[in-house]
Image (cartoon, rainbow, N blue to C red; front, top):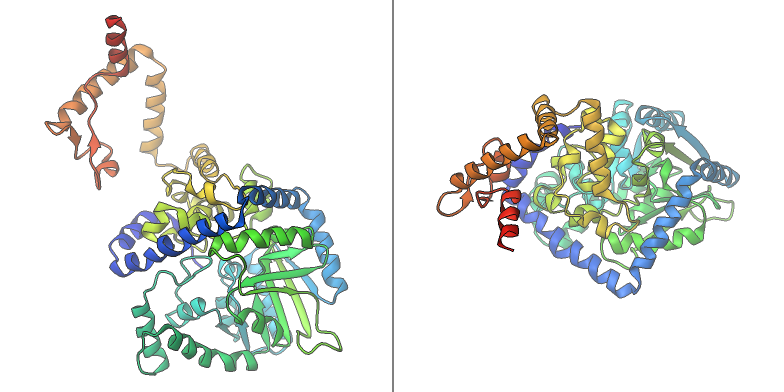
Length: 470
C-alpha cells in the first residue's frame, strides 16, 4: 500500500466535504464510543485490567528476543514452520515462494492489516496467484477497485448502506437491496465456493503465545476459521511485537481487546491455531507457515517510541479521536489511521514519508485515556515532533519563526515591547465584537472559528496594575 501521509491536509479537506463519508462516520460516535464505555463499566475494575495489560505487554517487549525464540521452538515442535522477514518485500517473497512451491493458484484471506502494510495482494497477483478477501468489509473494498481500508477493526466503516447496496448490485448482478441480512447472504454465496476451492489460507495474528507456539485470531465472522482450517496450507503473517509469554497473559488481553474495540465482552470467534492437523483430526492444514515481520519494529523497540509496540490494535484511540471522527481513515494516507497511525506510520515508513501525521491531533488526550494498554500517545506524538525539528523536516519558515521566538523570549526587554505591541494590535483587530475573524500569519486557527481578542494589555501590565491597587 502506497504511503500518502504527507497529503493529510488535502485529504482531510476532501473528507470534510464528503457528505456520504460524514454520514458513515457517525457510526463511530453512536456505536463504538458508547459501546466501549458500557463494556468497561460492566466489567468492574477496568482500570486494574488496563494496568495488567500494560504490564504484560511491557514484560513481553523487555525480553522480546527470548519470547520469540521460545515461540519459534514451540511452533516448530508442533509441526509449524517459522519464517523471519526483515521487511515487507521479504515477507511477500516468502509467502509467494510458499504458494509457488505448492502450485497454489488461489488464496483466501482473513482480515490482516499486516498484509495491507506489506502490499501482499499485489505481490500475489503479480505472481499469478489470486487473493480473495473473505472478511465482509475487506471483500467490499476488494471488489470496489481494491480500495484500502479506513479502520483497522471496521475497514469499510467509511461507506454507507446505500453505497454498499449499489456496489453489490453492480458487481453481483442481483436485484438491489438495502436489507443487511440479504446483503450478507449475497456475499456468503459468492465467498463459500472460494473457501472450498482455495489451496492456501492467509491470516494475520492478534497474538502469538510463546509457551504453546500458537497464533490467535479474534474475529466476529466465521471466515477466519474457514481460512485457517479448510485449505491444505495456512500462512499466518504478523508482526514480531505480537508475542505474549503465556496463555494466562492471553486471557487478560482477550478481556481488554474486544471491550476496547467493539464494546463486546468477547468476540464471536477466538481461534487458536497450533501446529498442523494430526492423523486423527477432522480439519486443519497439512502445512502451517508463520511469517514474523520486522519492518521497522525492532528499530522502534530501541527508540524513545518503544511504548507504541504495546498496541494490541483495538482501534479505541481512533474511535475516540475528534480528528478521526471528522475525517476518517483515508486522510492518514496509509494502513494505520488515527493517533496510533500518527505514531506508527512515521516509525515504520520513515519520518520523511509521514511528517504531517504527528501534527494531526488536538492533544486532547482522549486516545491515551481509552488505550487498553495505556500507551501515552500524545506524548509520543510530541516526541516525534521534536525528532522532526532535530532532523530538519519542518518547513524553514516554521523553524526560523521558532528560532526568532526563542531568541526574543530570552531578551526580557524585547519580549515586553513585542508582546505589548501585539496585544494592542490584536485588540484593535478584534473590533467591537472582540473576535478576530482572520488572524495574521495564523489563518489556520481562524479559517473555521473566531479567535477571542486579548484585553489590549500584556499579563505583566495587568498584574502590575492589580498589584498597585493593593
